[in-house]
Length: 182
Image (cartoon, rainbow, N blue to C red):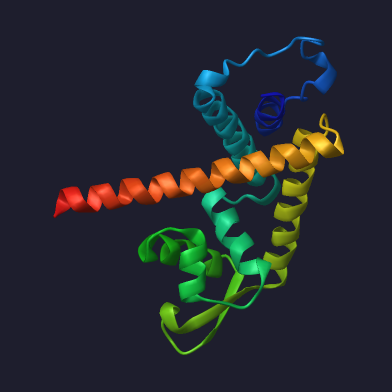
């Protein structure tokens, strides 16, 4: 929550509160039988503070920053791999890639038509890619700073299990929705 508040204050031009300004020593009690709600709250805070940070640092929306990040991760990337990595439909991905190309942040190579091309960041796009990844690294370091190496390893292993279960649950719900449509 502190990270979110800092990013919100920075986006509004105010000086951010320091970490130590929060209630020191206050412990958060979590009812483990209701872990989903705190995880969703944490996710929302992290997502929103990230959106504010990326907008402030790059001028890009959250999805534009995500698309540029995927394109810059291992360029050039072909259309099918990009759409799969984004987990969005072709039209939304296409509009965003076209917008990034119009801003001079992404370039394409290959035959005409986005589905035949391979995409890579321009020089200015690569600079923003670096900004996005450095901001992500700093944000992760901030969030994990209170954890020792052993705690961090256990947290990340647990988080990975929860992530896999969430992906499985999403796939299951999509299958049920497909059955309901049939």
